[in-house]
Length: 101
Length: 167
Image 1 (tube, rainbow over the protein chains, first blue to last red):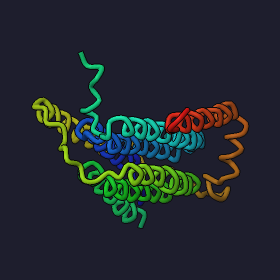
Image 2: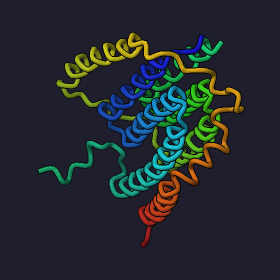
Image 3: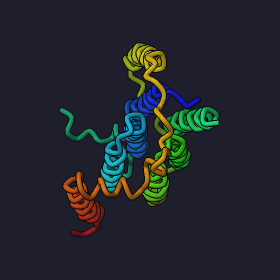
């Protein structure tokens, strides 16, 4: 008995929500980046689920491209964090408040 | 058998995702994220998308997470001394949106969107064979593919310049 599509979508929704909670609650910049990767993975799961359900390979091509974008974004984000750490010795995003008025 | 695998991989993904956002030590969060990524790769595999599953393990768990671990070790991050965000509004919003999420997942499961059709590994061999996927990638989505390679070039140059000590 194959697993219904709705179960995969529900699972992806839960993982996405866990990622959103991580972005909103945690104050460590690297954990925030990891939560963003969680959200991207939930989106990938949804894409593959629909691709297999509709028997359409375009969804998996899109997953390939999303993975590439996630890699590029993780690299640049981590470079920014390294630069910030070099200046402020802290990865706490609450310390980045010099533009607050 | 597929149901059992789905339950195992699904539970592993959810539990390790919750561990990612709740550990104080960023190294432990990174390991938990690797477990999440491998569970999601397992879910891809039982759906029949074997190429994407392999890609997930090689690219995501094998390259991106190694980059994360290198940066965590480079910055020598220890346990977080600072806790999570403590603003009052977070609790109320969290309860409201949490109820919304449960309702939404219930709707998905009840909607009876149907099973996945006939087995993807039908008569043409595997539905998701690498050959078919790459023929799509190089014909219909060729422009996206080339733009992605340009994006990667920009990301490489940007990351190197951002992280240099002296320009």
